[in-house]
Length: 291
Image (cartoon, rainbow, N blue to C red; front, side):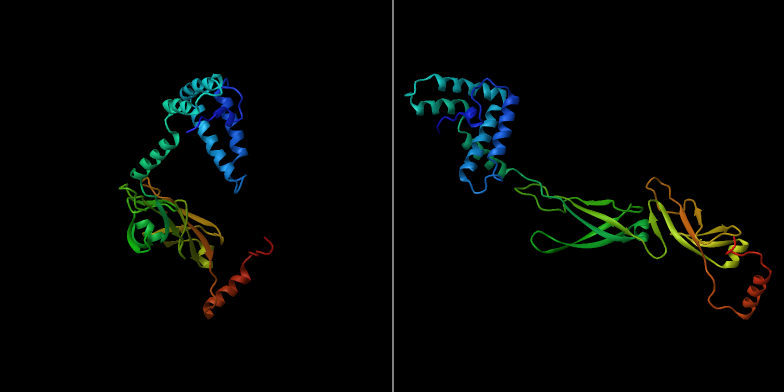
């Protein structure tokens, strides 16, 4: 191993420089000889190795002080000084850097390494998420085989939350623990209910005379039927809020059920119904085109 002038490698002329100056010189040198800038240049690749080696020694105050003693001696000795002798001095302080690096890599390769985590996602209905359920999913393992997992979805899980299956990720290396499997839950709306946060939205279909006169009707929430009051003169598109009949909030309470009123006009009328509507049309003062 020949003596390397680490200061010269970093573009510095003297050892009397601060750690900050060494860091700045390192950044400039690394940028100049970076492999992305010198594609295919083998000399640049060797130069960047020397730059990194120089920075590792000079950026640590204790090793810099040791190296400075050698560096100063190198510049004072006679040019005919046996280079092999100087190599021995360097080794005495630092050892064989490349050999040490290889030993560290070998040791690292033998250390137990934890396997990587794996992430996937599954869809579930509002009913399954509200009540809790077990679902089976199949995933392809690293060796190409299919593996089936049973996922227990807890009651009231929120949209986007993840379930963790410990040890079901990628296998560890050198006896390391397996990674984990994370399953993201996507709660899908259905024809009856739509979920927004902890509130649930549904449609409430009523007849024109119920809207005009007001009434009480039964409405189905996700887990039971409840009675609500329809105020007289309610309009299509208005919303009725039923507290505590929505989705679970994870704190022992529930959001609200919000019913949007939709007034349904019958497509076919009996003779009696038609007669009543005609009479109503003749006596009513209501004209939506004027109001």
